[in-house]
Length: 240
Image 1 (cartoon, rainbow, N blue to C red):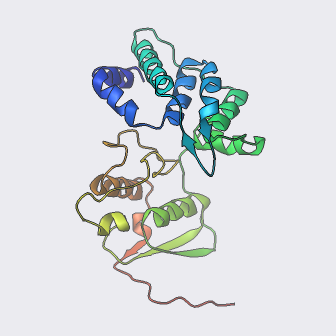
Image 2: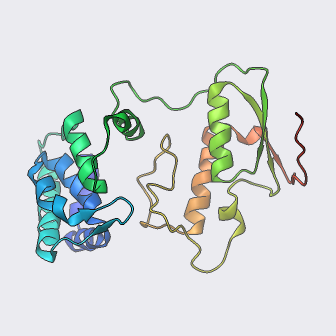
Image 3: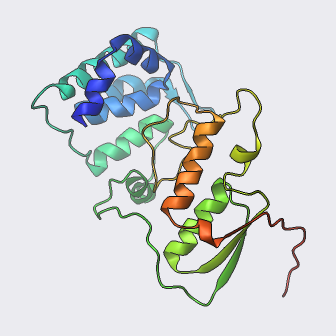
């Protein structure tokens, strides 16, 4: 962690440029986690509206204050002997989520959020293959959703085969090659929760980088051998 933070502060101008492009509500969550100071939540709460008409209209001076404090906190954590931030308590995490989305987040969502962020009490383990059952599943397509389905079926021990019309995985990120082709969802959302990547070159990465991510996932979780490439599904019939 220390090395990553030192990389961030090596070029403060670039760090501040990145902060200026980021969603201030998201930055607020990072600041509260790293600093442990929940007073920032009360400062920003009135300016975050949601969830259906989500917008942040915080005064520029407040946004600038969040940026400045984040730079200070990152510098402090990168210094020798700096302690790793403590995991937020369940109460604080619930307050953070409520402020971030602009409405109260119910208790029932907390376990899901903890698990997705790797903050659950149980040690998070990567998917592993379970003994196969007699059930067989056909998955059509080896794009993002198809690969995720294959990985989870393998983890559950359910037999499956993936039919993919192309000669490799990736779906739309394999097929599309137009100039500027890239994702319109932030990369940290457009990736698997069990296989996060913290090395995207851009906030909205381009086609080649996305395709390479899915190629790595297919290999890492050993699902490529279950895929029938150049096999296009032309018809499906319901058998009652």
